[in-house]
Length: 280
Image (cartoon, rainbow, N blue to C red; front, side, top):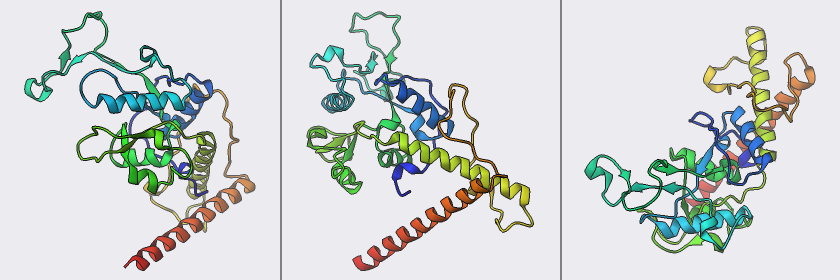
């Protein structure tokens, strides 16, 4: 119940039809399932490029650690599935107004300026994904050491000393940093909780609509109710059963689910207030 992955991470962009570098069919299906809930975990991040001059060492380390976590690492860098950026960055775009294709390479001129390789978001810890969303971003290369410690990801062994990078980092950050790695293993269980939340919210909304005016379920504003989405065509089989407002067992289950969850968050809020008061 209190898992950070059990709550919906809202997605601001439309679902993407990309392919994860892991190549796993279960990963593909899980991505589509998260997309059906409009969850950020149904999206993708692009893998970094390893060419150019901007933070190359950092990006190389991130890509290396990503491939190691996915069991796809090769000593031959030519086999690394990195994104390819053929744009000419020798002149800052703010001076010219445009970033052009490099004229110093012999590659096919018909090739796209950028070829991206992707990794599914659900491979990453949901607390990190929530941080990305809160910052209005869609991708991340590295994070402060303090953040990883605060999230408890060192104790869970999701991040180790091997994921640290001690070198040139983005402006505003202090080295060393942790590169973002796909070390999360509980995405399937999280989806079941997220999907259950969607179903129960839909069921309770239907009850409010049909019994409004004489029900003990108080009406709420539309912004307080999660809006369910229909199952997408590519999802052939839903792993979870449906719920119906006329089924008393489903209604009781939904009411107990949200009552238990409300109790947990009230206790968590009290704990945070007590900690704050003790720190003064």
